[in-house]
Image (cartoon, rainbow, N blue to C red; front, side, top):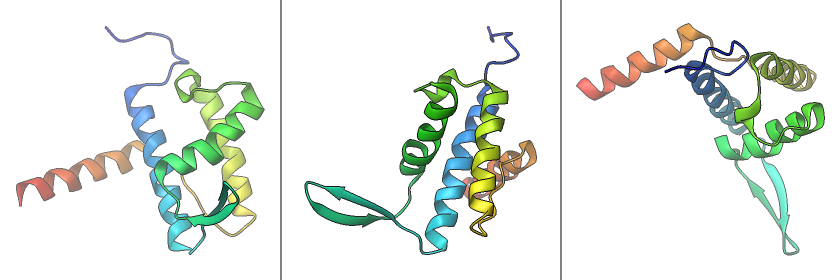
Length: 118
């Protein structure tokens, strides 16, 4: 039985959120941007991944804004607020990011289904 709490994230919203992480990390890589990280005194540059974007960008912002550690605790309105912050921050650097729409998710699903049939 599905939770009737209107503030709780739906499965589709969860998929869209993780698709967003994937899209943005891909865009950062296409722009040639890397994440600079130091581990045990050794500096490395990492390509962005879905998990890296989620852990470094998204979760830091959600923690500062709402004091929440887990994305599962976010409401739709809080997700929208974090997206607004990220959109503005990246926009100031001429990087356009867009949260995937329902239609975008359907199009992606259609692509997967077509690929499986071939």
